[in-house]
Length: 240
Image 1 (cartoon, rainbow, N blue to C red):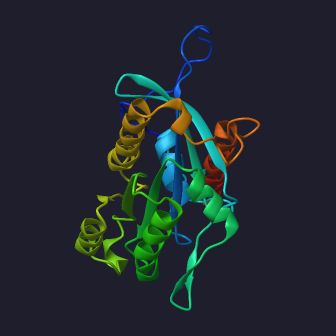
Image 2: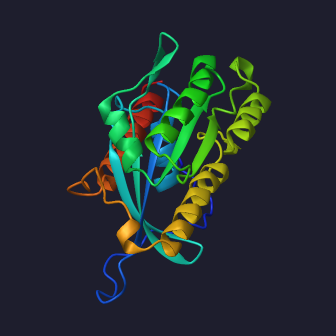
Protein backbone atom coordinates (compact mmCIF):
# COMPACT_ATOMS: atom_id res chain seq x y z
CA UNK A 1 0.00 0.00 0.00
CA UNK A 2 1.51 3.34 -1.03
CA UNK A 3 0.71 6.56 0.80
CA UNK A 4 0.85 9.76 -1.24
CA UNK A 5 1.14 13.32 0.07
CA UNK A 6 0.36 16.49 -1.85
CA UNK A 7 2.52 19.60 -1.70
CA UNK A 8 1.48 22.05 0.96
CA UNK A 9 2.26 25.64 1.96
CA UNK A 10 2.03 24.91 5.68
CA UNK A 11 5.22 23.79 7.44
CA UNK A 12 5.80 22.31 10.87
CA UNK A 13 8.29 24.10 13.08
CA UNK A 14 11.63 22.33 13.17
CA UNK A 15 12.85 21.19 16.61
CA UNK A 16 15.33 23.35 18.38
CA UNK A 17 15.80 26.84 17.01
CA UNK A 18 17.00 30.05 18.55
CA UNK A 19 15.87 30.19 22.21
CA UNK A 20 16.17 33.95 22.08
CA UNK A 21 13.59 34.21 19.30
CA UNK A 22 10.23 35.71 20.13
CA UNK A 23 7.58 33.24 21.31
CA UNK A 24 5.16 32.39 18.48
CA UNK A 25 1.74 33.98 18.66
CA UNK A 26 -0.89 31.55 19.99
CA UNK A 27 -4.03 30.89 17.91
CA UNK A 28 -6.78 28.80 19.54
CA UNK A 29 -9.43 27.22 17.29
CA UNK A 30 -12.39 25.09 18.39
CA UNK A 31 -14.13 22.73 15.95
CA UNK A 32 -17.81 22.11 16.72
CA UNK A 33 -20.72 20.34 15.04
CA UNK A 34 -22.97 17.31 15.15
CA UNK A 35 -21.87 13.73 15.67
CA UNK A 36 -20.31 11.93 12.74
CA UNK A 37 -19.77 14.98 10.53
CA UNK A 38 -15.99 14.46 10.38
CA UNK A 39 -14.67 16.96 12.92
CA UNK A 40 -11.75 14.78 14.02
CA UNK A 41 -10.90 13.88 10.43
CA UNK A 42 -10.92 17.58 9.57
CA UNK A 43 -8.55 18.43 12.42
CA UNK A 44 -6.16 15.58 11.60
CA UNK A 45 -6.20 16.47 7.91
CA UNK A 46 -5.25 20.06 8.70
CA UNK A 47 -2.48 19.20 11.15
CA UNK A 48 -0.94 16.16 9.43
CA UNK A 49 -2.18 16.44 5.80
CA UNK A 50 -3.31 12.81 6.14
CA UNK A 51 -6.76 11.24 6.07
CA UNK A 52 -7.65 8.36 8.37
CA UNK A 53 -11.07 6.82 7.82
CA UNK A 54 -11.62 5.25 11.26
CA UNK A 55 -11.33 7.01 14.61
CA UNK A 56 -11.82 6.22 18.25
CA UNK A 57 -14.76 7.89 19.92
CA UNK A 58 -14.21 11.65 20.11
CA UNK A 59 -12.96 12.50 23.60
CA UNK A 60 -12.51 16.21 22.93
CA UNK A 61 -8.74 16.16 22.39
CA UNK A 62 -6.65 19.31 22.23
CA UNK A 63 -4.01 19.22 19.49
CA UNK A 64 -1.01 21.53 19.47
CA UNK A 65 1.51 22.29 16.75
CA UNK A 66 3.80 25.04 15.49
CA UNK A 67 3.09 25.93 11.89
CA UNK A 68 3.99 28.66 9.47
CA UNK A 69 1.22 30.81 7.99
CA UNK A 70 2.11 33.48 5.45
CA UNK A 71 5.73 33.53 6.56
CA UNK A 72 5.03 33.86 10.29
CA UNK A 73 5.43 31.05 12.79
CA UNK A 74 2.28 30.51 14.89
CA UNK A 75 1.52 28.18 17.77
CA UNK A 76 -1.80 26.58 16.81
CA UNK A 77 -4.05 24.80 19.29
CA UNK A 78 -7.09 23.04 17.81
CA UNK A 79 -9.77 21.82 20.20
CA UNK A 80 -11.79 18.88 18.90
CA UNK A 81 -15.22 18.60 20.57
CA UNK A 82 -17.79 15.81 20.97
CA UNK A 83 -20.86 16.05 18.73
CA UNK A 84 -23.86 18.07 19.86
CA UNK A 85 -27.55 17.62 19.15
CA UNK A 86 -30.81 19.56 19.15
CA UNK A 87 -33.15 18.65 22.01
CA UNK A 88 -36.73 19.92 21.85
CA UNK A 89 -35.82 22.60 19.27
CA UNK A 90 -32.90 23.93 21.34
CA UNK A 91 -29.20 23.18 21.40
CA UNK A 92 -28.23 20.40 23.80
CA UNK A 93 -25.04 22.05 25.01
CA UNK A 94 -23.00 21.30 28.13
CA UNK A 95 -20.38 23.07 30.18
CA UNK A 96 -17.53 21.30 28.40
CA UNK A 97 -18.72 22.67 25.05
CA UNK A 98 -19.26 26.11 26.57
CA UNK A 99 -15.71 26.17 27.99
CA UNK A 100 -14.29 25.21 24.60
CA UNK A 101 -16.23 27.96 22.84
CA UNK A 102 -15.25 30.61 25.40
CA UNK A 103 -11.61 29.50 25.19
CA UNK A 104 -11.40 29.74 21.41
CA UNK A 105 -10.12 32.69 19.41
CA UNK A 106 -11.97 31.34 16.34
CA UNK A 107 -14.40 28.55 15.52
CA UNK A 108 -15.08 26.08 12.74
CA UNK A 109 -18.70 24.88 12.59
CA UNK A 110 -18.91 21.63 10.62
CA UNK A 111 -21.85 19.84 9.05
CA UNK A 112 -22.11 16.92 6.65
CA UNK A 113 -23.95 17.18 3.33
CA UNK A 114 -25.13 13.60 4.02
CA UNK A 115 -26.87 14.53 7.29
CA UNK A 116 -29.62 17.15 7.22
CA UNK A 117 -29.87 17.22 11.03
CA UNK A 118 -26.25 18.37 11.22
CA UNK A 119 -27.18 21.20 8.85
CA UNK A 120 -30.09 22.19 11.12
CA UNK A 121 -27.59 22.58 13.96
CA UNK A 122 -25.70 25.36 12.18
CA UNK A 123 -27.78 28.38 13.14
CA UNK A 124 -28.24 27.08 16.72
CA UNK A 125 -24.48 26.66 17.14
CA UNK A 126 -23.71 30.01 15.54
CA UNK A 127 -26.09 31.93 17.83
CA UNK A 128 -24.77 29.99 20.83
CA UNK A 129 -21.25 31.08 19.91
CA UNK A 130 -22.36 34.71 19.68
CA UNK A 131 -24.01 34.48 23.10
CA UNK A 132 -20.76 33.26 24.63
CA UNK A 133 -18.70 35.79 22.63
CA UNK A 134 -20.69 39.03 22.70
CA UNK A 135 -19.38 41.73 20.42
CA UNK A 136 -19.13 39.58 17.28
CA UNK A 137 -15.33 39.64 17.43
CA UNK A 138 -14.61 35.91 17.12
CA UNK A 139 -14.24 34.73 13.50
CA UNK A 140 -16.44 31.78 12.48
CA UNK A 141 -16.08 29.60 9.39
CA UNK A 142 -18.77 27.14 8.26
CA UNK A 143 -17.50 23.94 6.64
CA UNK A 144 -19.65 21.50 4.64
CA UNK A 145 -17.87 18.14 4.76
CA UNK A 146 -18.19 14.92 2.72
CA UNK A 147 -18.58 16.76 -0.57
CA UNK A 148 -17.48 13.59 -2.36
CA UNK A 149 -20.59 11.66 -1.25
CA UNK A 150 -22.99 13.25 -3.70
CA UNK A 151 -24.93 10.01 -4.18
CA UNK A 152 -26.22 10.15 -0.58
CA UNK A 153 -26.35 13.90 -0.01
CA UNK A 154 -29.23 15.40 1.98
CA UNK A 155 -28.07 19.02 1.82
CA UNK A 156 -27.36 20.97 -1.35
CA UNK A 157 -24.10 22.94 -1.17
CA UNK A 158 -26.04 26.07 -2.11
CA UNK A 159 -28.07 25.73 1.11
CA UNK A 160 -24.92 25.88 3.20
CA UNK A 161 -23.63 28.86 1.26
CA UNK A 162 -26.89 30.76 1.63
CA UNK A 163 -27.04 30.14 5.38
CA UNK A 164 -23.40 31.15 5.81
CA UNK A 165 -24.05 34.38 3.90
CA UNK A 166 -27.08 35.10 6.07
CA UNK A 167 -25.02 34.57 9.23
CA UNK A 168 -22.10 36.59 7.87
CA UNK A 169 -19.66 33.66 7.84
CA UNK A 170 -17.18 32.41 5.27
CA UNK A 171 -18.22 29.08 3.75
CA UNK A 172 -16.09 26.16 2.53
CA UNK A 173 -17.26 22.94 0.93
CA UNK A 174 -14.68 20.20 1.51
CA UNK A 175 -14.02 16.52 1.10
CA UNK A 176 -11.66 15.69 3.94
CA UNK A 177 -10.98 12.28 2.41
CA UNK A 178 -10.07 13.58 -1.07
CA UNK A 179 -8.83 17.16 -0.91
CA UNK A 180 -6.54 19.01 1.50
CA UNK A 181 -6.58 22.48 -0.06
CA UNK A 182 -9.99 23.69 1.12
CA UNK A 183 -9.38 22.24 4.58
CA UNK A 184 -6.17 24.25 4.78
CA UNK A 185 -7.90 27.36 3.39
CA UNK A 186 -10.58 27.27 6.09
CA UNK A 187 -8.08 27.11 8.97
CA UNK A 188 -5.67 29.47 7.22
CA UNK A 189 -8.35 32.16 7.00
CA UNK A 190 -9.09 31.88 10.72
CA UNK A 191 -5.39 32.00 11.59
CA UNK A 192 -4.98 35.18 9.56
CA UNK A 193 -8.04 36.81 11.13
CA UNK A 194 -6.99 35.97 14.69
CA UNK A 195 -3.39 37.00 14.05
CA UNK A 196 -4.59 40.34 12.69
CA UNK A 197 -6.76 40.90 15.77
CA UNK A 198 -3.93 40.01 18.15
CA UNK A 199 -1.48 42.35 16.44
CA UNK A 200 -3.86 45.29 16.85
CA UNK A 201 -4.88 44.43 20.44
CA UNK A 202 -2.96 45.21 23.61
CA UNK A 203 -1.60 42.44 25.85
CA UNK A 204 -4.00 43.46 28.63
CA UNK A 205 -7.01 42.76 26.41
CA UNK A 206 -5.93 39.29 25.38
CA UNK A 207 -7.88 36.50 27.01
CA UNK A 208 -6.03 33.83 28.93
CA UNK A 209 -6.53 30.17 28.14
CA UNK A 210 -9.41 28.49 29.99
CA UNK A 211 -8.27 25.06 28.81
CA UNK A 212 -4.81 24.03 30.02
CA UNK A 213 -2.20 23.23 27.42
CA UNK A 214 -1.86 19.45 27.09
CA UNK A 215 1.04 17.85 28.93
CA UNK A 216 2.46 16.88 25.55
CA UNK A 217 1.28 17.65 22.01
CA UNK A 218 -1.08 15.01 20.67
CA UNK A 219 0.90 14.73 17.43
CA UNK A 220 2.42 11.49 18.75
CA UNK A 221 -1.09 10.18 19.39
CA UNK A 222 -2.07 11.09 15.84
CA UNK A 223 0.95 9.27 14.44
CA UNK A 224 0.18 6.20 16.56
CA UNK A 225 -3.43 6.09 15.36
CA UNK A 226 -2.33 6.58 11.76
CA UNK A 227 0.08 3.63 12.01
CA UNK A 228 -2.66 1.48 13.55
CA UNK A 229 -5.08 2.35 10.76
CA UNK A 230 -2.39 1.69 8.14
CA UNK A 231 -1.52 -1.68 9.70
CA UNK A 232 -5.19 -2.69 9.81
CA UNK A 233 -5.57 -1.91 6.11
CA UNK A 234 -2.44 -3.91 5.27
CA UNK A 235 -3.75 -6.91 7.25
CA UNK A 236 -7.07 -6.69 5.42
CA UNK A 237 -5.37 -6.67 2.02
CA UNK A 238 -3.12 -9.60 3.02
CA UNK A 239 -6.04 -11.71 4.20
CA UNK A 240 -8.01 -11.31 0.96
